Structures are given as C-alpha cells and as structure tokens.
Image (tube, rainbow over all chains, first blue to last red; front, top):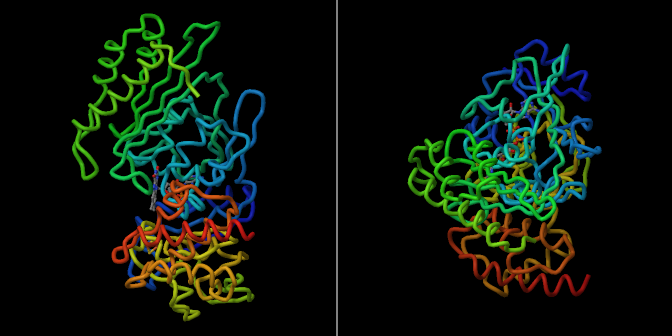
Length: 280
Length: 156
Ligand SMILES: Cc1cc2nc3c(=O)[nH]c(=O)nc-3n(C[C@H](O)[C@H](O)[C@H](O)COP(=O)(O)OP(=O)(O)OC[C@H]3O[C@@H](n4cnc5c(N)ncnc54)[C@H](O)[C@@H]3O)c2cc1C
Ligand code: FES
C-alpha cells in the first residue's frame, strides 16, 4: 500500500516533501493516464503521493508592477477566464485539452511534466517565464528554459515543489499563436508557434519566436531575433531556426512536416510585420 | 480512509483510498451505473460528472480531489427540469443511437447551457470537443444542442 498525504497548507507540504519520497499530485491529468490500471483498482503508483489540489494558497493569479504571478494549482480554465492576464497568455491555455480537462489540469503540472508536446512551454520560453521552487530550507527562482532539461526531464530536486510561475510584463504590440494538430480541439500538438513583437516610436523593437513540440525542447534563438530586428532578413532568420531543429518522426507527425510547416508559419508572421499589416 | 463529499444532493461517506478514481467509487460503491468508462484517459467524456458545478472526467479524478465537494452524476441531474429539456431535444433530433456516450454528452451539453449565453456553432463544437461518439454521429447531437441553446437561452 502506498502512503497518501493531504496537507492543508504549504508549510505542511514542505515538511512532507522534505523526506524526499513523495510524488506530487496536482490535477492528475498526466499522472492518472501514466499510472493506468484495471477498472476498480487503485492507480498503479509506485511512490507515495502527496496531493496538493486542496491547498488554497496554491491557487490564483496576481500581478505587480513588473510581473504576473501564477500559483501552481491554477487551472487551465482559470487561465483562459482570467481578467488579469493578456490575451496572448490566455489563448494557448484555451486551446489545450478539452473543457473537462481544462477544468482540472494545472499550470504547474504542465511545466513539471515537461512533455515535448506541453503547450505552455513555448509560451513561457517566448515570455522569458520564470518559476519559483520551494523546499523546506530554501527557495530558488529559475527561468523555465533553465528548468526544463529535456523530454520529461527537469531540474527539480526531490524535496522541492513548484510554487508559482512568474511572467515578466513586456509591452506587446501584437502576437500570433498557432497550434497545429490532427484536429482542431482536444488534441496534442504536432507543433505550435508563439510569435510576439513590440514597436517603439514606430520602429520594430523586438520579436520573439518560439516553436513547441518539434524538438524535445521548444526552439527559441535570441541572437537570430536580434539580428532580424537589425536587418529584417526573413531568410536569414528562418535559416538560423532551421539549424536548431532536430526532431524525429513519431505517431503524431513527421520531422519534415513539422519543420517545413512551422517555418512557413513563422515566415508568414515575419512578412506580415514587414508589410506593416495591422495586428489586432 | 473515510472520504466525505456530497453526491447528488446528499452528504455521503465512503471507505476508500485517496488515489481511487471517482468513477469507480460512484459506479461500484454507490451503484450509479449511468456514468460510463470509455477510454479511461480523459479523451472520450463518457465519464463526465459535475464537480462543484463544473464538468470533469471522473476517470481521472482521484478521491482526494473530491473531498468536501459536490458531485452530481447523470442520475442526480436527471431529476431536474433542465435535464428533461435536454432529453426531449436529443430524442426529437435523433441524437442517441447506441447511447454509450449519451450521459456524458448530456452533461457536457448542460456545461454549455449553464453559461447562459447565446452560443455560436464554434462554441458548441468546442464545448463538446471532449466527448467522442462512435455511433450516432455528431450532426444530430449538434442539432439538438443548437436547438436547446436557442430555446433555453431565450427562456432563461
Ligand atoms: C485528454 C487530454 C488532453 C490533453 N491535452 C493537452 C494539450 O492540448 N496540451 C498540453 O500541453 N497538455 C495536454 N494534456 C496534458 C495535461 O492535461 C497537462 O500537462 C496538465 O497541465 C497537467 O497538469 P495536472 O495538474 O493534471 O498534472 P499532474 O498529472 O497532477 O502532474 C503532472 C506532473 O507534474 C508534477 N507536478 C504537478 N504539480 C507540481 C508541483 N507544483 N511541483 C512539482 N511537481 C508537480 C507531478 O508530480 C507529475 O509528474 C492533456 C491531457 C489529457 C488527459
Ligand atoms: S472514460 Fe473518462 S474520458 Fe473516457
């Protein structure tokens, strides 16, 4: 029999995970599938579990002057309905899973699970998102990029948990988001493209392009972004991104399809800026 | 351990594990067989119930996340006036063939109607996107929901 714990506060949770032997369980939409078992049987958890969904301190979205703070147990539904967050953050959450999944799937779960297809990762890469990890004796803040180490791999330590996501506020003039899957809703991504840009005094100030699910980790190339702002060379930008693509064929798609189509979408977005098309 | 929650309007207690699925508890401990198991992985919606008024897949819901909350299954929902309107629309439009997806479809339909806003075709498709039907076909179901959104929203 596995041991299941149900702390009511963050302090209790920190004590429990300090022993280093508990698996954290939030909404369960990844874990319940992975630990599938016969009808009527308890799920096949090998480790002891600590549940965190009941901890009210771990829910909610707030903002200060420079950041949005999103607590780990905030659901995808909370994200899509938020009055605090801008549309470019809400949209990817609105397109994840299906309504019943979004009602329980959590923001923190999507990050720590670190699937290649996790749709929040390209968004958080593009926004330079950070996370706050806590353990009994210390806290540390990492960029999402430094935290995610590979497919299903993160830098989390046994006695730590993800407390919140911190997203720096930036002036966004326009954004585009495209999730491509084999159907429109309730589907895991073949790939996704997050595109943001900012103008200052009528001049292009920055672009941010991040592509999810093509590689094990989202693709983002800051140098190429800066070069593009200087020289507006679409071809050069696309070549730089293509060099970083190292995906493989799998059941969802092929390497060729993912790379070609995602780059064409990026090309279209960049051309839109150069043409001066207005963004909503 | 003893888990307490509200089931179809009544306070209930059940001896179970925190990692047991709500689906198994309602079907086996409470003998409510209207909630179905299809895929067991959140894709098909046959197991949808309301948890504190929101649709959730009971196949993915551990009992821990149900403690102190209110669960309504298709059996509980079938006692409401709204259910009768949905049942009638599904019957008139022929939106039921084998019936396996139907309890989940009805719950997801209520999830949409509850929003109390007029719904576009896109809203209806997104609202039912977590419900898979392999026999009736979606068009008859969409027709029934379209009709309901017109009637129910106008009446409310
Ligand atoms: C039908 C279906 C459709 C889906 N569609 C999508 C989709 O379109 N896009 C997408 O990206 N994902 C999708 N998912 C995957 C899943 O819903 C998300 O990854 C979700 O955000 C996971 O959150 P959770 O709370 O349910 O995670 P859980 O299953 O509770 O946990 C996932 C992992 O994160 C760890 N964890 C959770 N919270 C913490 C924390 N605070 N600190 C440390 N570790 C933690 C757990 O130990 C576990 O390893 C889908 C899943 C299903 C079943
Ligand atoms: S059985 Fe739960 S979604 Fe299919």
